[in-house]
View 1 (cartoon, protein in one colour):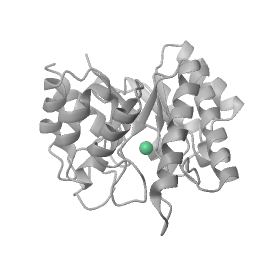
View 2 (view 1 turned 180 degrees about the vertical axis):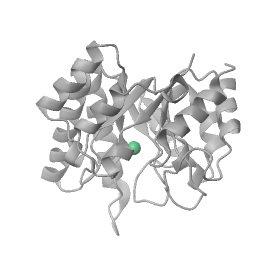
View 3 (view 1 turned 120 degrees about the horizontal axis):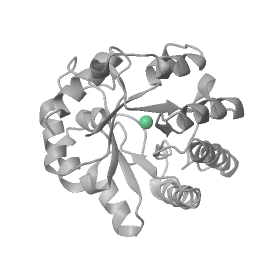
View 4 (view 1 turned 90 degrees about the vertical axis):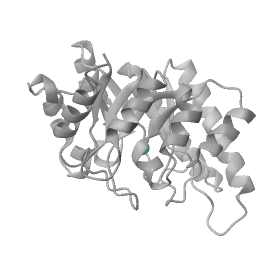
Length: 264
Ligand SMILES: [Zn+2]
């Protein structure tokens, strides 16, 4: 049975306190809407402090399962400025350590940002070096790093299947991916990602939009063909985690995807 989970992003964006995540995780909901796994966003006012790591750890020893989304605001692993880049790396290593402590199933990582108005060669090399550094660090901590495809309308590296194929050709590492369907849909590359890279997917991010911007809508409220996406993933033998990243109707979205995956 596939695992369908929920990201704490909707709680974070509502500016609710971190303790609300704990309440939501423990809340007794009917089975159809109950997330099998939770993705905790380690960011801003929800940054994983020692105390919060202990809270999640307690839940994990009670049988709850987690993935962690590493910090992304004011974080750029391809920053041309050495000290800022190192600060970003330090922040991400700390997130890997937190993930290891709570025995997270994976840690989601965003690629770096392109250097505005400059030659991309150096930034691109730094992006790649940083990813490899973090991959090694995660490996030695026993954490699966899941590297995310980004919205092509942003300044990020790694938005197209070709970017990942090139990376994997140059670097013979067993780095995994989190396939973000909402982001891929904006670039019209959903099918291409699945057909070329599904063997790298450890988790998928599900949230809807209408193809022009990253709205993180409830499943079914945008124009993504979710039955088509799930059946393609099944056909490709994807057996990883489905994480809902909708910031509206999160539990209805969990229920919809659980329903779609029921026959499998
Ligand atoms: Zn992300």
